[in-house]
Image (tube, rainbow over all chains, first blue to last red; front, side, top):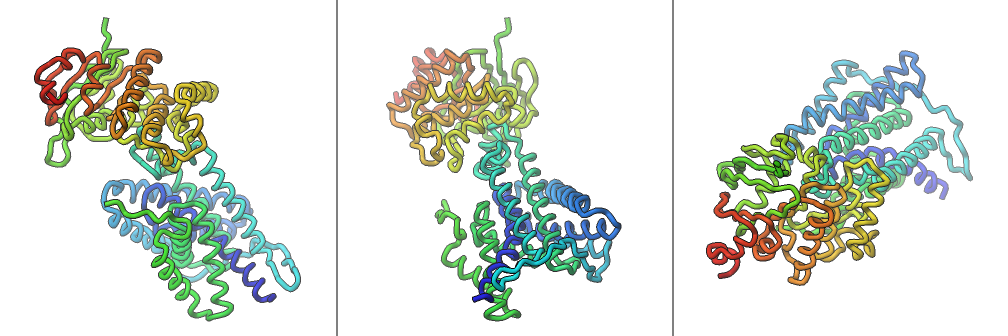
Length: 291
Length: 238
């Protein structure tokens, strides 16, 4: 029983990071109908920026803020330079561009930081809590708290603020939104900025939990967060959160009870099965394709 | 005195190799209702989209004597040129109130927005009853009212209405046209009306243009066109 409860806690903490990344995927998809495959690599950018600053003796809060700012700039620039010129072309061109950008970021990182893995310093030094044999490490606790706060902030932003409402309007009908005077370009930039900021935080939390940095470190969590977003229903904000937590739980449970080696395979298999029965995700509406 | 609010000169719109609008020019006087009638495919909606800045086009557009040809759609809205698009295009997953807030997107005067919201709810009591409902759950007539109300929230000087009667029962069409008249009379909003329902449109128009294959073929006062034999044959069913 303790093992099971322990795995739930582990799964939730892992899932919280997936959820943060998935939010970026899903928001960008909602606005641009683009699967931004470079999003995972923003995690890498975020953790490397934090690493370099921390290694040079800069304080943790400043490093975190700089990492967020850095990722926002990178994310917004990617949209302006690579995606915007292709906005009215086919979605496939956009998708291929996104994959290209992903490799570009990885290779740039290799060029600047080298291929050898780096070790992220331990930044969360809180003692583990123990409840009836279930251990919650400081890392897990901080990850969960920060992620949940950010999710609530994003939820409020999308639901209550003018910008959030405009984002929903743009995601539903871009042309009608521009007829309301909404500047589509700035809404898209804001969306990329928010997604990248979340990815920066997710990157730092990821590095705190799994302290090995390498140029490709963002791709697997990125892909899994993408799955989480599809799981929950891509384009739907609460879906990304739900999908993230579910994916975290499924992954830790498979690792604990079925197989460590096969856990990723099993996660992907679940996605395939899920897409057969619910192609639009758990919270997605089953809309028939209009002909 | 120059009473022209809006002027279009030699507007041309191309879709690839196909020319949908072939050099049309017209003027809209301040405070008037002008309609653009024509059959399906005549280029009416294309014209409106070009005027709103959604489509690339040739030719010039002037508003209050300023050249606004190259302004983006959001800049045009900020000047007071607001379109109520064809098929209403309300935001189905936003509530009625949120839809109206989007209409007021560019405004910063919170107090005034609140007053205007109350005003809209007084003119459209049915929208008030449904204000927390999602836009997509409204009936066709209610959606058209919401689309008009949403545009009014931006405090337009010139309202571009694209087929407001589309898909509505004759009774509702009458109601919508009365609303348009009210907006023009009481609020002093200038209206450019694009309609297939030529009879209704002409009956409330000060001036009208008939569009055929992307060209203006006839123009005159609403009354003149209503009584013109050609127009009767072409658009009013004999």
